[in-house]
Every structure is written in structure tokens, then in C-alpha cells.
Image 1 (cartoon, rainbow, N blue to C red):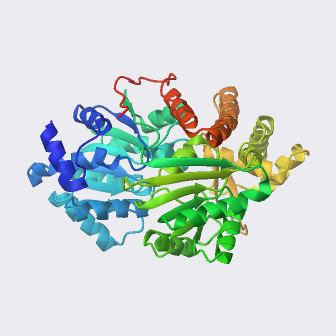
Image 2 (cartoon, helix red, strand yellow; image 1 turned 45 degrees about the horizontal axis):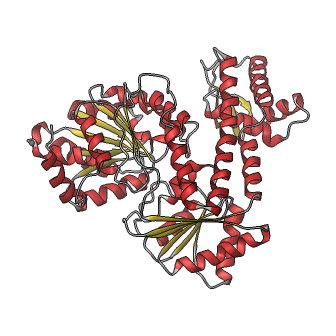
Length: 514
């Protein structure tokens, strides 16, 4: 049991916090009491301290009996950056990821075995290794497992990561450890998914305020679509002189257009989206983080795991798809606590662009169901019984399209992708003799026991995406007239996310509004 004085002194010396927020103290109290927790707090609000402080306090114990805090993180760059920052303040950390050399990994194990490191960062891929888990459990007691960016566990979450879904099962290797899920935002569906997928046991749920007070919001609705680009460029030019500026574009095409237009205005900017090769993205990211480029134009592919604390402005060159995305992305401004700005320039046409994108991601339910049934039929015809190779993806697309003449190829592909995300199908490179390209293989044991319920859930998720887009549209329209009123809507939206019933044993008895 830590005293308030011990916490305060350690928070100051290791993390630079003059005092702990009520939210942080509530989470730490629950961990100290052995309770699993789900903590929801904006980007830059100090969630790292919720797992870092217990690890730092562990140093007071003799090295031979020191325990370990295990932190699962989705990005290698994020893990390494956090470890570097903490070690600079005297807290030794071990980092385990798939890119390490054998010598480096051996050095990390030495930190754990000697008791030097009380905090271990690990990628989901490394956690999936049973040998790793067995060795860690045999070496040191793991008393806390924290899952950073926990919304990645949810199919409904922003930045869903399929590999994150298995974390709950892997945590069974450390049965005595408290489980802590951390995220910046969560809707009812995402929250329920996190609790279920991570196996949180009667967790306490803590909710901090959605918007940070050091960020000033401004939203402009342009009357003509042709005015959107120049108004966005004007906003960038005004703000880039105030410091680092991060601009989010809803599509790659718009990102490219903004980047080119800024170049013509002699404003140097970086460019980051999934259409660029990995080397180019890394170079652009490094230039922005190091301050060599003052402005970054990006899609939502940029941001998670980026800890640049001096971003003064986040600009949305169009409507985000939902409020979760808006809060996540605007929260990257002003992480140093100094004044910052969040600006959005949008046109009603943005809404229709996102509707189209949702329709591509979630095809009509009848079509999606027909595609899955078609795949099952084709696998049955081929006598497939879980072999190492399956039927050609192109063949399945053609077969499914022939059964649904009105369906577009992209809709069939989207339905296949959805089935893959749900583990009903597995996509892999074929090893079949004479075969080339990518094959789709039906996973053994994935037959739907309750297909009606599965497709009801599909329809619900589809409707949920449209509902969240509509909430985003209403927020933007209100904010263009009145920021205080819109921020009230924003807080009410996320407040409602935590008053709806969630399946399972969930405690709502200790929420912070600090």
C-alpha cells in the first residue's frame, strides 16, 4: 500500500508531475486494492503514470523480490520512446519487440532477471509467444498488466488491431496480475468489447473529462465546396508560425492536394499516409518529430504512438468520421500543457464522403451474408478440410459476384475483408503448388453457431457507424455557430457512453470528473 506522500514524491521525481490528478489517484487506488480497471482519459492527460508509478514505487523493495509491471503497446516506436523518456528520469525499463537482435533481447532479459527493470514494454506479437510468457512468469512476479491504446481490441474501435483481440487469453499466464485497460475514448460498444476481450474481472471504470482545457476549438463551415481548400490553407499559414502544426485530411487525395498547394505557397510540410512507402513515411515522421518540418499533412494513419508534446495546432481539413476520431486527433495538440488550438474547416459534402466510405466498409447485410454463404458452399464443393491452402481470393470474388449480379466487386471484397476480421476466413499467401497470389482460407472451427445473432450484430455495427457519423455532423454544425454549446454536446455524448448498461459485472462506482 503506497502512501499519498510516496506517490507524490515519486510522481515529481520520475514523471515531473507537481501533483496527481484525482483521476490518477482513483486508478492507482483501485490497482493498489487489486481491482481490474478500465481508464478512459484524453490524450496527454497522464495515463502513463497509472502504470509507471506502480513500477517506480516497486524500486523501494529489495532487488531480489521486486515485481514487474507489463505494458502491452501496439507500436514499437511508442514503446521505445516511452522507455527512453522514463529511463532518462531514472526508471529502468525493458523492451521486447519482434525487431530486436538476439543480443539486445538478452540484455533486456538481464534487466528483468537482476531486478533492475520493474517496467517491461512488450508488443502483442511477443506476448503471443508462449515461451516468453513462461519465462517471464518464472523469473519475476507480474503484478500489473496494462494494455495501452486498449480500444485497439475492439472491432468497433478506432484503429482496431486484430492481434490485440488475443491479449486477454495471453494474460491468463499471469493470473495474479491486476489488469488495466487504457484508452482516450470509448463508446458503449467499444467499452463492452474491451472488457470482454481483455477478460477484465468486475472492473472499476474511470472516466476523465473528454476535452482538455488548454485546447481552444474553432470550427468553420464553408458555404461552397470550392472554398474549403483555400480556407484550410489560410488556417495552416496562420497557425504554422505559432509552432508545430498537424493537419488531418479525410482522404489520401486531399492530403496530396494540400501538400502540393502548401509547396506552391512556399510552406514546407511533411506528408504521411498509407499510400507512401514505409521508408518515406518514417523519414517524414522523423522530420516532423525532430522539428525539421513545422507542418505535417496526414490521414488518420498518422498519430497513434506519436508523442510530440509541443504540437500547437491540429487542423481537420474536413469532417472526421466520428467524435472518437476527432477527440483522439485533437488531443495530440498541447500535450505539454501550454495553450494549443484545434481547428476544423468542413463542408456538408464531407458527410456524404464518409457515408460512402462506411458503405464500402460495411456492405449491405444481405450481400455480406450471401458472400459468406457462397464461400462456405465453395469450400464444401472443394472438399476443403483445413488444409494449408485454400481457394483463390479472385475465384471467390468472381463466384460470389456471379451469385449477386447487382453487387460491385468492391462490395464483395469488403464482405470478405469483414469475414477475415471476424476470423471466419483467414487470408494468407498460398503455398499450393503452382499457385500465385493471395488465397482465402476458411479457419477450422469457425462455423457460426448462431448465424442469426452474428448478422444482427453486423447490422448493428453498420448502423452504429452511420449513427456516429451523424453525431459528428451535428457536432460540427453546432460548433460552427457556438463552441460552448458544441462542447457541451461532446461531453454529453461521451457521458452517455458510460451510463448505458454493459454486459457483465461492471462497476460504475468511482468516476472522476477532475
